[in-house]
Figure: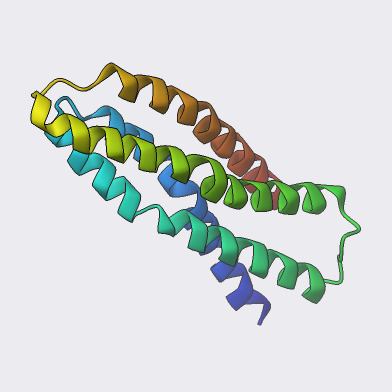
Length: 147
């Protein structure tokens, strides 16, 4: 049972962390409004992966804590669990509403030519620090389990 939970936990971590590295790179590759619209559409569809991965990560992490009888006695486990929960909530409450606003702006801008609207850059800059914080929190989580 421990081995299966550990594999699920690691796969959940990969699903949780992977998109944080890939999505910004994909977004930066767009040079026209059409490309940006396509890229945003793809990244929006893949946004469910970190949510599922984060949920699996948290559930299997707690389950592993129970099986190994660690409970909440280890500070790094508590911090890791808290950061993971915070990131999952942040995706829903912070990043997704801003992405919806960006999609709306892009839809309105598609008729105005190929140039990416300046407003897009401002909205992305509001998301980028959050994505960077997510990556840092994920790195903390990996470091804790690499222990």
